Amino acid sequence: MNDLKDSQIAFKIVNATDRDGAATEYDRLTWLDTKEAANYLRKSSNALRIMVHRGYLRPRKFRRRLYFRRLELDRLLEGSLS
Image (tube, rainbow, N blue to C red):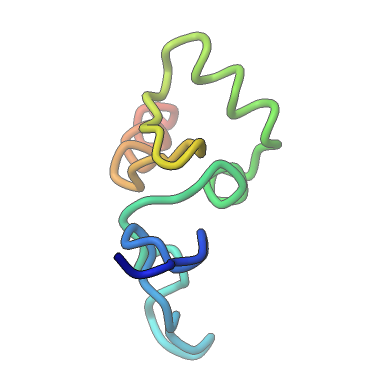
């Protein structure tokens, strides 16, 4: 089996579009790790962990790290607008 670094996990897609393009870096990602998800929601990592504990988000664990679906984060943001 290939030795993959954590940054090369299949969850991530490399090569974000340039800043002029319509898509952002997050548009190309399906799964975000804790730090990326916190930045996406504009929250701290600790605030994200509290949201998980309260049941607002459901992370998936892979190789001792938590990952969040971007679609679930989008739903959380959309629900907070109503």
